[in-house]
Each structure stands twice: as C-alpha cells, then as structure tokens.
Image (cartoon, rainbow, N blue to C red):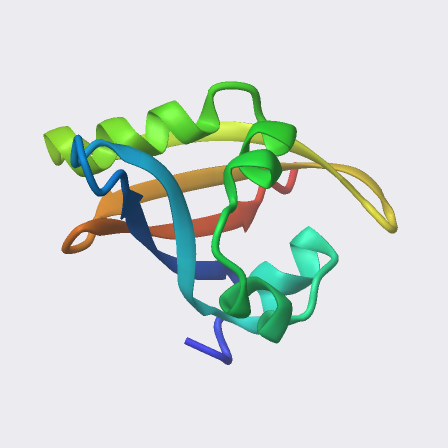
Length: 111
C-alpha cells in the first residue's frame, strides 16, 4: 500500500449514538500519495475524527455519496478536480464498502 502510485485510504463510519446514522468518517489508513494529494501529513489525517468539512470541500455532496456506499454496498466511481501545489489536476476516485466504512483509491487522470 505504501509503495502504490495511487492514493489509497480506508475510512470508518462515525455513527450517531442514538440514531445509528452515519454522520461523519475517520481515516483508519492513509498511504503517502493520498496524504500528499490532500496536502496533509498521514498522522494528521489518521489522528483526527471528523472529515465532513474536508470531504465536502473536495466535492460537494461527497460525504453523502460515501454514506451511500456504506449503506448500499454499491461502489462509487467519480472524477474529481483537485487543486494541488502544482496546479489543478483531475483524478478518478473509486470508493468501495469495507466493513462499516470504505476503501478509497484515487488515481491521477493522465491524457
């Protein structure tokens, strides 16, 4: 995972204690490429709960789409535009259900 050229992360659902509904996610694992894409250190991402703001900043509605992946088991494939330190780039994002969370793979789209 750490030597992959793709960004890879695993996230766990954070559920409301009363309703059981997913209200957020937290990172369990993040490889170096994924952390670099977000401009964060791996430790920063895995030590914090509450990724709702970051997910919705990356793409409006992304949190809700991740919730759908966990609840239905249907994978998500989406193209995202990300602003990085080297300019705007396009990425393919694939999210699949993993336990009570999901696994994310992000690959740069090259022309």
